[in-house]
Image (cartoon, rainbow, N blue to C red):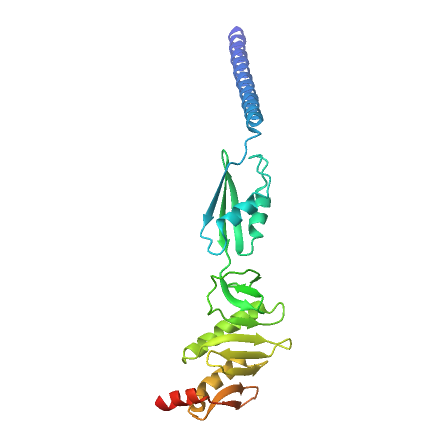
Length: 259
């Protein structure tokens, strides 16, 4: 019995020590967290007035001047590094005409970095707008735009369909040494194409690709006529087509005879 009581006493002492060690460790952790939190708080207070002093513009903007990007950024409140709203800066930069997307991040202690991606203009849209590769409309001006950009026309909401169809028709005609320069889609979704040699194709509303192929098949025979030039080819028939001609200028006639 005495031996059993002695063992129990030893076990109790070990449990007490384990409790003391565990509690001590817990208190040390709590104390450390308080110190860290206090230190961070003090650091934030000391640096709360840190201002943005450097702006870094990245990417390869071709049409947007870096000064315009920086001017847009400076419309935001840059007085506090911590309170700067990067979403607001992003919206300001993306409001520039040529900017498609912008990503903004802060770099301690006093810098913000802006990565800019511009629209890539692939066509004019209804004369006063531009299309990018995704068929999205944007409004911008630049004297750096190539003169060879195609001109597309259509009702609002038809941009993607028009650009997709243009690519399809252009590829079909290119194989046969014909160059598509313009496309128009009417309110009733009737299609017209213009080639670089002045020929206009009326396709109507259905079987567009089939009708373009019909023109390609018969064109070599039509262009053999020397005294007139093709003006309009009406392909809005289940079979066949109708051709309107225009007189050939004397200079063009001489060139044809030489050829």
